[in-house]
Image (cartoon, rainbow, N blue to C red; front, side, top):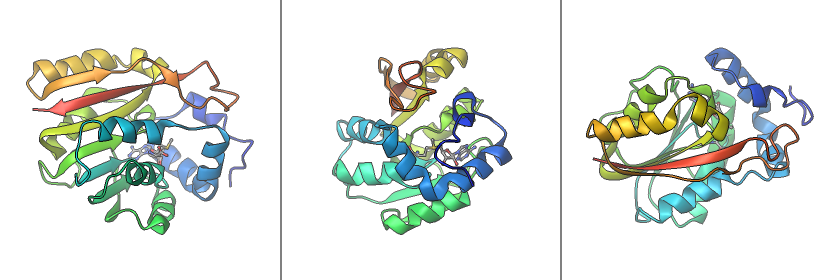
Length: 213
Ligand SMILES: C[S@@+](CC[C@H](N)C(=O)[O-])C[C@H]1O[C@@H](n2cnc3c(N)ncnc32)[C@H](O)[C@@H]1O
């Protein structure tokens, strides 16, 4: 079991699915308290970005929902429609279940698309704090566009260092050029985990809002 002092793994990250799942399973029971200690703002910021573009009744997929902080932020931002969650960490999903916010919660690996979800199922999709662990940027974003209906919106976050390293801007532009997006917006870097000693001001977060063609 990880204690609240033992999160240095987070900065380095990992794309080994088994290791990631175990880390988040071990952390699930105390994750919300730890993230509050670090002043984690991404769920609220993502929910606000989505609320600016989508109506309250939208059906939303929370990809990498973890313990459910984004679902709670979506409800706080006024979303009243169904919210489905998926994650690779079963213990995190059990925490999310307790909130009563999600219509469904399923185990899934975003590194292994296609997901077992039909095309055009959702009005919107959010993926917050997750893409650190998913190295194939173009593949996962393309999969997200498959799941969202035309005119729907995808909001994702990525650490600013990995945004550059993994060529996110080019990947998003590539999707638009391929006709899968009609519009997109990339935010300036913003504070991510300001009160985490490893992140602080060193690592920010960038949000990408994409409109599906
Ligand atoms: C930093 S947490 C973010 C959770 C939630 N979105 C939030 O903002 O609090 C990262 C989440 O991504 C999940 N995750 C990591 N790799 C994944 C993968 N390949 N497929 C699905 N979920 C994954 C982890 O289990 C964890 O719940």
